[in-house]
Length: 208
Image (cartoon, rainbow, N blue to C red; front, side, top):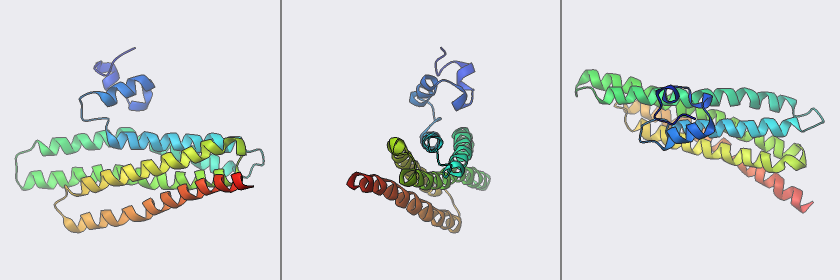
């Protein structure tokens, strides 16, 4: 098994390596993978739980939920590597000499670094909603998996929103920063409501 310092492993897409290798790369003293990639992977794992829990519903009413979770899982997984690449562009811009050219390039790079967690946030909000649907209507034996999916999706959404906010602070164009921040609120609210609905489904089932 290769380590995070092996060139072959170090250059490979995060999710094409083993879990142990990904964790080694995460723990290594390197800029990436970092929080954005972890938020994306967490979102993909949440979607996987929703997909699995949906598959155990024999009524067929959750087939579309499972199919959508499958699609979102793929999108979130791809963002793990995209986030690392976007952060690398920011680092390149930061190494440039101070001046207008550096400012312009940094704004473009940071815009890309904002876009990745924003996409994760939006996907995670939808995954949390799907998880709540499965918790409320799915197989009771898989309720814990659905609730875990909702909790992980909300955590992913909150992490991604925080990272996006931190990146926004690096922009020189404040009007653009405000526009990015406005996109955060709906996704966060949606993820939180979905997590609450998933947990409430469990509480309701316990009472009945």
